[in-house]
Amino acid sequence: MKLYSFAQKLGLVLVGGIGFFLIPSIQSIKSQSFSPFIAPSPGTSITKSGPVDTLPKSDSLTCDRLTGSMCNLSQSTNQPRSIEQLDNSQTSLICGYTGNCSPSDFPPIDSELLQQTIASISTATNSQTVVIYPEILEDRIKILVVLPSGKEFRKVVTNVNQQDLTDTLVELLNSIRDPSSEDYLPSAQKLYNWLIRPIEVELTEAKAKTLVFVMDGPLRAIPIGALHDGNKFLVQKYATATVPSMRLVIKDLRDDLQLRDRRRSKILIMGLTKAMQGFSALPNVAVETQTALKMFGGNERVFLDEEFTIENLKKQQNANNTNYDIVHLATHAQFLSNTPEGAFIQFWQNRLSLEDIKTIRLGENKIEMLALSACQTAVGQNLGLSGTMLIYRAKSILSSLWTVSDAGTPALMLSFYNYYPTAKSKAIAIQQAQLDLLEGRVTIEAGKIKGIGNLPAIPLNQVSDDINLKHPYFWASFILVGNWL
Image (cartoon, rainbow, N blue to C red; front, side, top):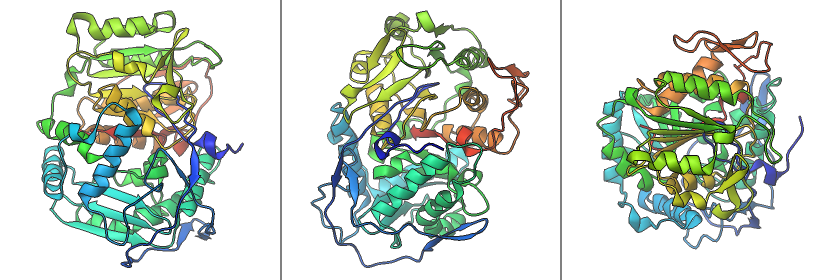
C-alpha cells in the first residue's frame, strides 16, 4: 500500500461525502518534567502471532502548532493538571483556531459540574458514560478519567513518548486503509494498550458503555473504535465520541437531557456526483442521498450537482426561517493550511471556504448534526472538525477520517440513519451502524446493499461485485465530534 507523507496524513472534516485535507506546520518541542506517579501498563502489544515491541523512542520529537498541547507549554507538568486546566487549554486552542469565540463565551467547567452532567446523561441514555482526558507529554501519557459515580482517577503510561505515539498512529492510518490486509492490528493493539488498557479495570467496574474523549494533539486523528484488545475492537465494547472540550458542549448537553424525539427530524441533503475541478466523481452519492431522504419521510428534496450551489444552501437555510436538524453534504472538501481560511467545501463550480461559512445561518437554532462522509481525505489533527462545528453552529459533526469507498460509504451512513431516530444517543446510533458492518449484518452482495432495517436491497451505481464491509477501512473512519446525545 502506498505510504503517504506525514503531512498528507494529517487533517479532515466532513458531512455525507466530504473529504478535507489539512497540512499542519511542524516544530520541535522542549523537554519537560513529569509527575512521578506511574500506573502499571504493558510495554508490548499482543497480536495473533505474539508480542510486538513498541517502536524505538526518538530524540527528534515533533508537534503541530495547531494542537498547542506539546508546543510552547509554559506550565510545569510536575503537578497534575485539573479538569478545569485541561479543558480550558483545549477550549482556548479551538477558539484560537477559529477566531470565532473566546473561552469566556462558554460556561466554566469544573469537576462537580462535569460529574453531575455525565451522571444525568448516563441515566437519560441508560448508558454509563465516562469522560476521558488523555494528555500527551514528552515521555509519557497522562490519563484523567471522570466517572458518573463522582469518582475521578488518573493513570500515567510511561512506556511511550510522543514520537512513539505519533509513529504508531501514522502506521495505523496507513495500514487500515488497505481493506485486503490485517497489518493494522499491531498498531491498533499498541494504541489500545497505551490508552485503554491502563483504565479498563475501572471502566469494567463502573459498567461503562459510552466513552467520551477530550483528545489531545495527534489523538484527534485516531479512529478510536478500531483500537483492539487482542480479541475485540473497542467499538464492540463501547459507544464512543470525541469533544473539542467539555466547556464547549456542556450547555448543549444539559439542554438536551430531556431527549428530543428525533423521529421528526428535518434534514437538508445536498451533494456532488460528478467530477468537478480536479475531484473525482462520486456516483453513489445519488444512492446515499436519495435513500436517506426516503428514510426521513421524503418530504424535502435533494440538491445534487447543478442544484448543489452555495446560493441554494443559503436559500434553504433562510427560507421561512427553516430550522434543519441535520445538514448532510456529500461532496469533496480540503484543508490545505493551518487556518480556517485555507479550508473549503466543493460545491458545483464553486468552493465555500470555512471562513465564509460564518455568513450562512441555518435558522435561529443550532442544528443537531452536520453529517460529512468523505471520499478523499488526509487525516489530521482535526481542529478543522471542531472549528467547523463551532462556525457552522452545529451541535455535532459526523465525519470521516480518511479516503472512504464511494460504494462502502452509503452502507454505513444509511445504517446510521436507520438507528438515528430511536437510539438513546447519536454515539449509540453510530456504534450500532459500525457493528452492523463489522459483524456482517449489513452487506454488499452483487452490487446491492442489504440488511439495513426494513429497507429492500439498495442497488449501487457502477458496482456489481460483493464487497466485504467487515474490515475497519469501511466503518472505523467515521467519528462523532461534539454533543453525542
